[in-house]
Length: 323
Image (tube, rainbow, N blue to C red; front, side, top):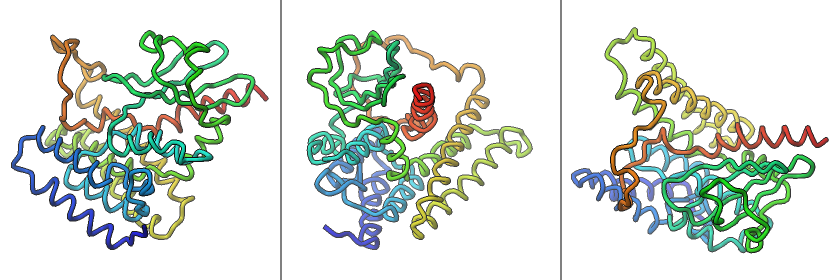
């Protein structure tokens, strides 16, 4: 189904008005739950995915418009681990149609994923811990003496104890790629994390609320610098998307990651020592109902940062050692 940029923009405008701006009088939990359900119903959790996999097949220009609207009106944006890491990797596989069930579940917000990196042969496990049980694990195996690989597994019994999967745990797994380094670099090149650029605006809005009234304060000046840089990156992102210059878009993405890192550092400075560890209120370990509260963007895992700064660098180190 062909979608024009103008029709996508109009749809995005109407959607945000109907399911977020017009619901401002509702309590936060109900408003967020309603928005989340609408994202699924209208295929807007992953609007850039093809129709067959739960998206709307929108162009990058349409995605820029939608995510910029979400940033402007503080609409909750989907957690990016599944939508911007796992899903695009599935779409990059040799036969995406075999992953249709996974992709549609991601588009509907019905599946939770965890990312685990396994270093071999020593086999220490590094993982993104999740507050809730996960349905699937994206496993990146770093081999010192051969190409690393990416696979999909069900959570194995030893995962909660940070134990690597056993040969029996691999029996029902699926190998997504036999060359993790190549596939992750292709992800960086072909699936630009446009939403990540606009999530940065939410980070800076949070910092602005915490900032002092003194315009000459050091933290306030650093925040002003980040806000100026963010505005410039948003403008550049729009222009480069329109021009189709994907090589320069990679630079915008890199700067967006730098803004996120600096905003996190500034938040720690603003909140002080106690921001370094999250307090655990009494009863935290007791069973609770799922919360529909808006997730603070500072506590979202940005998979593009994780892949580029952590896994890719690690894989490159292993590749050099093996050569």
